[in-house]
Amino acid sequence: MKLYEKTASELSEMLRSKECSALEIFEDVENRIKSVEDRVGAYITLTPDIAKKRAIEVDESFAKGEKLNVLAGIPIGIKDNISTKGIRTSCASKMLENYVPPFNATVIEKINNAGMVIMGKTNLDEFAMGSSTETSYMHITRNPHDLDRIPGGSSGGSTAAVAAGEAILTLGSDTGGSIRQPAALCGAIGLKPTYGSVSRYGLIAAASSLDQIGPIGRSVKDIAMLQDLISGYDKMDATSKNIEYPNLVDNLTANVKGMKIAVLKEFFGVGVDDSIKESVYKAIKMYEENGAEIKEISLPSTEFAIGAYHIIASAEASSNLARFDGVKYGLRAKEYNDLTDMYEKTRSEGFGDEVKRRIMLGTFVLSSGNYDVYYKKAKNLQKKVSEEFEETFVDFDVIISPTVASTASKIGEDINHPVKMYYNDSCTIAASIAGLPAITLPCGKDGNNLPIGLQLIGNKFSEQTLLNAAYTYENLCGGFNVLSQTL
Amino acid sequence: MINMSIDIKNIAKLSMLRIEDEKVEKFKKDMEAIINMVDRLPNISGELGLNYDNVMTLREDIAVQNKYTRNELLQNAPEVQAGCLVVPKTIE
Image 1 (cartoon, chains in turn brown, green):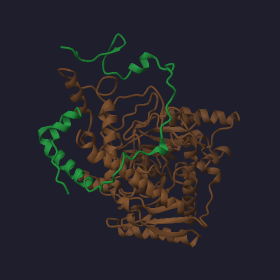
Image 2 (cartoon, one colour):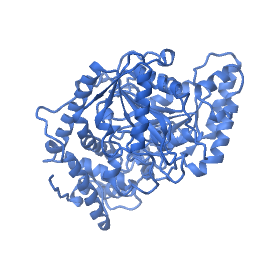
Image 3 (cartoon, chains in turn orange, cyan):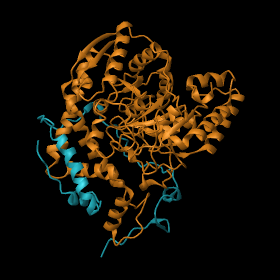
Image 4 (cartoon, helix red, strand yellow):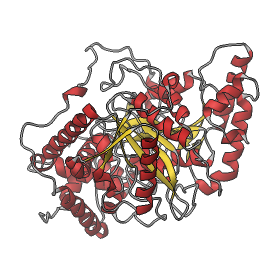
């Protein structure tokens, strides 16, 4: 077994027992990138020099007998909307094509302090707006399990990198499903943490009240390790929750005896592929046979979550993206007559059509006369959805559902059907607008040998319960085969 | 279902964007499809539903010592003169 095929927890132990060095791990992942990246296209920017330097530093620290973080020396890919000092952070947009942040996001500070090896910046839909990574200004990313298909999005580069062996772990960001949906389509594990548990400082905002950074990997333990590293209160993020964040890895247990699991009826409805329903029901049966109590429930307001989400997300995106005006950083149009002309030309040249559509949708729902009809209605529905979830978690520990209604579509198939594309996120959006943690796990394959995803949703700040349920399923499956066997 | 008609040119203007004439119809069609989807939302009465669970913790109103140099912050600027950002003339 090659080093790039191993999990972070395996590599972490190997580093400590001197079975391999951080430099060897870096070189193996680097070679893997060289052999598959031209077919997959997971990265926008590769940083081999920085990565190699870090790996050597980690080896030197180990040689001196220093006590290092469990993730020291582990290669990681970072979604290109997370600010990295001195490394271009493009958001896959022409607008930020040459933008080099003068500061690190809080999560990057933590990753650097832990001695993780940043391999590069991964592709995404422009400004994280999309579900297929096809709206990236840079290039498309292909699904490592079938190169004719999309990896999902918006964190498609991060999930493809994990499934292709081009990173051991990656960071993504999730606003309405942008970690979970691509992780499901690429057969990887992806956690969207509770809103407020991971600092958003340095994450270039799409919809600030929904955005959350989270880990993507190939084992539940790896996800727990990375979540332990990145979570925690940060005074630089006003929405960061100032509470204790107990260590998840140490308390990881594969036991669901007595755990109360709710099966969310609405997410098994029309539009969900039969093969997906079948696979998820099989998983539910496994939970039941191992002592979990299963009950079907209905959350009627989740039907409206998708509409409410698109109003709130677009409204916030239109405000957040107002900052891109060609004055302080980013693109500036070459020729213009006056200030307004410069703004309009800069923004029209710098943003792609999907971003423009969302900015305009947000402007529309916030404009005078529409605010009450759309925005206020959406915020009230958001509250209603949150309350229904809250009531559910009085009686249940975890909610189970498919992650996505269908497996990966062919490249170019859905890109011109925005409503169809938006419905793609119907199973992931509810947890987002309620601020809940949710994880996707590989759950078998369909008739085309494409990965299926199973979603577990937990109560706020119940990542431990969520990960324990995930860990149990992983053990019952005998581990997950996330890596593509066909590349 | 309300069949909302959207004035793309006007919305684009409010958004400081310009949409090419040949793309107006497509934007109009796409945005109307989305608006019609969200028009199905039921009305829930009451005050604006804010989540008081997640109130923001604001920092104290004290000036923070800047840890960046002017040059670092200007390195991404499209046009700089004498350490200042250059913009087109705004007063006639």
